[in-house]
Length: 221
Length: 221
DNA sequence: GTATTCATTATTGTATACAATCAAAAAGGA
DNA sequence: TCCTTTTTGATTGTATACAATAATGAATAC
Image 1 (spheres, rainbow over the protein chains, first blue to last red):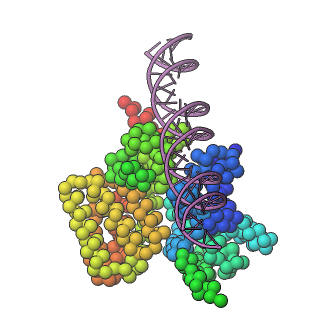
Image 2: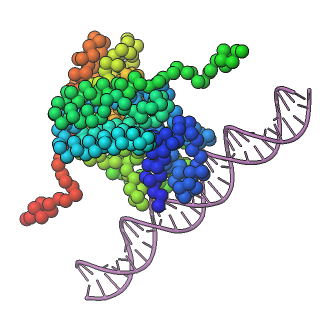
Image 3: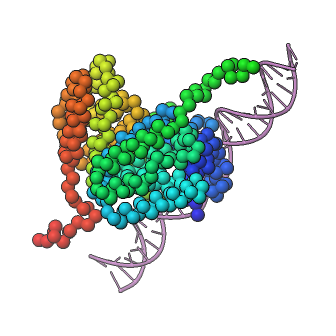
């Protein structure tokens, strides 16, 4: 069975897990035969993915995985820096031992996946940790926006991340859980802010204006 | 000429201007003949509008204008309360006399439209004032999210607003411009926060659980 | 040998046809 | 008269057909 939602999730996973790298083309007929549905269904999914900024569709040229610009990358991270810490106070009112153990389980799986070299799993779990926290705030509108930003961050790391970093090498997500267990919203906010700023600054933004490379200078001799 | 973008803007305007009230059905063939394109093009637009939460599409039932739930309404306003004031510091670095006069012109048109009873114009201008400010922050990712929230707010006011209020009866948008001209980010943030909270609290959220009305009690005698 | 033009191929854009589903009216029975 | 069942009509879901566009490679002229 291949429902729209299923296809969407499938392609999105492939993108954020870096199976489909930035710039990869997504021909409609190839996808339609892969999923066993007609182009109509594929087009619907591709359009949605483009509105969510995971793919870009150029008129008469088709769809390809978005290659985030530097400014887009920074803006996404800046948005997270602005929003995610602010969600902590609301989040902490819903915090309890049950949630704590649920999230601790996630961090364990994270570390395990990272250790076993399961890059795809690790990336998914890292993003999920952040957006599930956001959902705990109770504001679904903001949470789903943050969720999208987390997925976009995975794509950004595919383009600008350092090789080994799946995202969060700076200290452990478990640290945050320890802080949340103490109940200090302020400390948690600081941790989150620092954490995201660290990711932001770890992006390698080589200022290659790839539109006009100076081949003259590059190949002289 | 009826491009996708054009059709989208056209329908969106009709929704936020309360021409198409919450709950209004949007049959595909009716729209297709209205815009002179096939159902294919209409479906694309409707799908986009549904992802943007302006319409909801029910399987085999078609599309209708979204009737925001109370929680959705509050969450949208809360999101704006959380984000918009935070954009002021970045915004103020780009503030200059040119921008000031541009926005003052907008507030003039706002008041004029309101005075002339041009409800549609007034609603559009009120929303535009907010999201154009957001765009001045320089963060396009956040700005376009705020833009969407502003449009959604217009839809929310259609459902829960007091009759006369097009949105911002509490003091004038011009007040904010005065503050911005002084250069005090802190004051501007406070004003914005207060302004949005006022709108939030002006919503009339009658707790009618219209799913199960107690007809027994309602019609006894 | 190089450059320009033309033709071919692959891919997307748009419309339409048919099947599937739902809602409401009509018919029938108690 | 009221309730159930059936049928009909309208509307959407999905696939396919055809037109339009862009990219690639071949052919010809210089």
